[in-house]
Length: 349
Image (cartoon, rainbow, N blue to C red; front, side):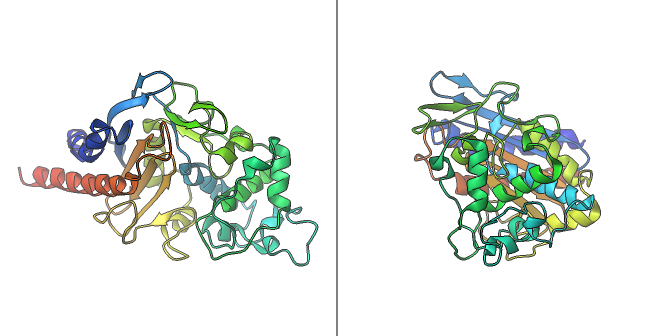
C-alpha cells in the first residue's frame, strides 16, 4: 500500500521541478522520497549534460553533491569518531591537529576552536576563501589552511570550518577521506558511473563532469571535508533512510544532529525555520542541507519521511538561474502536501 502512495506523491511533487526543466531554467532534476521503513520512489527529467555532448539523465547518473558532503560524509565521520571516544566534540581541534597555527600557539584564536564550534558554524572563520589560487599541491594547501591567520568576522556558514574538520578526520584515522568506507551509491570522485555535468569552468578550461566542481576541493585532491562527494539519487536516499531509521548513529549522536544548538543549526545540519530551503509545510522535527551545484536533502523525523532534490543548476554556468532557493521550497512543500494527500485518501477511500 505504501509503495503506490509514495510513487504517486513523488510524481505529483515533482511538478515544480518538471516545469523548470521544461522551460530550460535548469537542465535536469531528480526527486526522490523515502520512508524510514524503506519505501521509496524517484522521478527524473532533463539532460545530465548539454555540452560538450548532450546526455539524457538516467537514474544511474552520479551527481556532484557539493556541500551535502558536509552532512552525508564529514558530520557522520566526526560523530562516529566521537562515539568511539577518539575525539571529544567540546575539545579543541588541536587534539587532532596539534600543528594548527603552530607558530603562534599563545595567541592564535584558531587553536581554541572546538569540533562542535566547526560543526555548528559557530566560529569567526570566513565563509569561503579561494584556496585553489595559492598553489596546486594538496599537501601544501592543507598546510596553508592550517597556518593561515584567518580574518575574523561574525559567525557564518563556512566551508573553512569543514575543511578543518576533514583534516582532523584524516589525522585521527591516518587515512585520506577518500579511503573512508561509504554506503552504496556514494563515492568520492571520479564516480564509478555516468556523471551529471556541472560548470564549464574558466579556471580548468573544461566542463566538469565526474570531477568535483568545487575549486577548493579539487585543489585539495578531490576529497575534502566540505565538498567532493558524488552520489546517485538512490545512494542519497539510501543514506537518508538509514539515518531516519537510526542505523548510522547512536541515539546520543542522533540527538546532536536533531537538536538546534546555535541559532537554527544542529551539528552539521540546519533545523527547520522560517524561510529555509525545506519549505514551510514540514514538521519542526525536520533537518536539511543544500549544495551549491543544486542539490538538497531533508529529513522529517515526525513523518518518518525524507526527500532529496538533485539538480545541475550550475550547468553550463553558475551565473545563470538563481531560482534554486524558490524551487527547493516549492518542491519541499509539494512533497509534504502530496504525502499528506495520499495518506488522507488511504484513510478515507
